[in-house]
Image (spheres, rainbow, N blue to C red):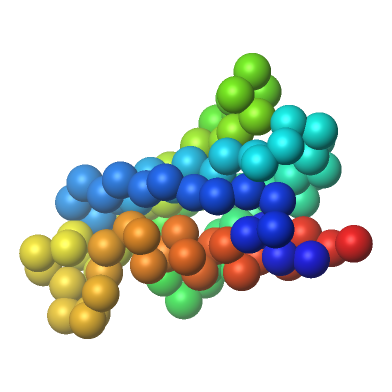
Length: 101
């Protein structure tokens, strides 16, 4: 099952750093996503985009996670030659993450 079936996301980008929040639709799925969405797996999933570190912050009260992705926007939105380097494109790619059954 894809992450989009369990959660939605919000993003913010600043320079070459991307902030992606993943918010569970149902708090009962928080622990399942906590186990699946490790920084290592998120970085592997986004390996073509994220060149730096991935740091995960857990927000259990909100049933959410915040990921800070370094060196993830091709130098920044105004410097990148990518057609769409904004964070929302990366968060959409993250929603394709395979959580499993």
